[in-house]
Image 1 (spheres, rainbow, N blue to C red):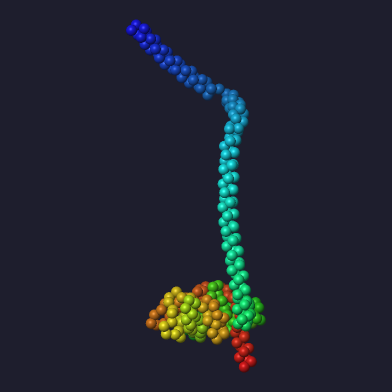
Image 2: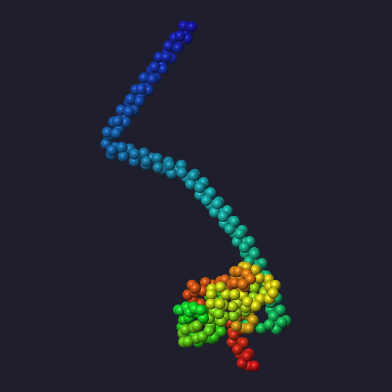
Length: 286
């Protein structure tokens, strides 16, 4: 019992000693910091620079493994991306090759059928761009005046196209100025057909922005949203040119919405398909 008591007393004294030592160390550290704060900055800068000179090489050496890992990761990722792109391009190239073979086959079939039917292809179209300089719109006419520098190859009856569709035909030429009869004019009558069902009719202007589809057969398959294209009947317009979209069907008739916004036209293309002149030559020969 006496030994345990002596040991306990000694431990208690040791703990007190440690507490006093810690207090003394804290005091000495605080005093040292105060002295350092009052010391010359040049000395501190020298110490700091010396420490950096020693530590910088060590830090760089320690960074090398991390840089190597990140570099290897980027390289592997780039290789994976290139592999995926290469795989996608190979597939796309194969699809294009198959499509090319299909097109080549269709061309050969088309040539064989043309020979069997003695088909003569129409002449290639040429066009001249003209700038709209005036608009004529009243109760009796709906037309525009366009300007083109060279009008030698422009003839009455040629097709006039806007950005996306037919807008009319050439009505008159006076020097460098061309009068365009719009298909919304009351005097305009264009043979058209429904692209989907091939139902035919006449697109008639009424001097408004909404022409009417007339003379359609009873029971014709026409619904709102159908695209109207030129039918090629009468030879004025070649077949297949977009004209308008059926916007409303009622007991009062079939209204057609123009594809090209005629009121905002700035430039038009006057196209020569060689169709109108061909009809005139045939009539002249007869």
